[in-house]
Image 1 (cartoon, protein in one colour):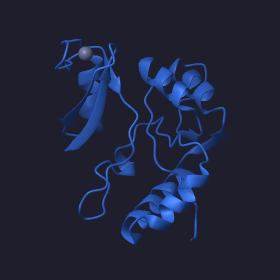
Image 2 (tube, rainbow, N blue to C red):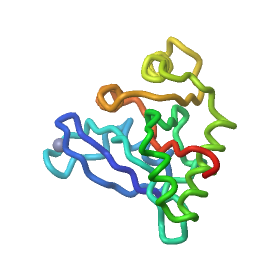
Image 3 (cartoon, protein in one colour):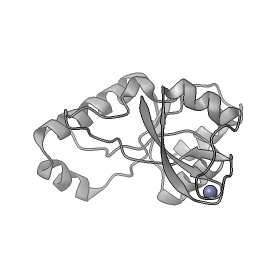
Length: 158
Ligand SMILES: [Zn+2]
């Protein structure tokens, strides 16, 4: 089971469980998911940080990530302090996620939003990318139904 945070076109956010990422995609394409607040079936995944469970495992492992999965966190000087303050287990989980992303996805830097759109609308080859984007751009992407994920981009080492 996988927990997704969803958002309808009117901006209501809600959490919903799915058997796996594919099940979500299928239901979303067929408009089978309804917003509990207004009943709209036009929903998209809302940006969210990976959830860290009790065992230190994210509820959303990288294997479940959609093709356009992307950590979109902007470089943040506070992140280093945050990384130092977080439990070791959590830091390691985030670092592993970061490694997975760097190994499997193509870096596009600040062009992330632009490139994600091109892929979504078929103007670019379908592939996994990662990069940075602003909160505003991330919201716009989510409204257009473009799938991506966000994760805190913590620095390597201490
Ligand atoms: Zn709604």
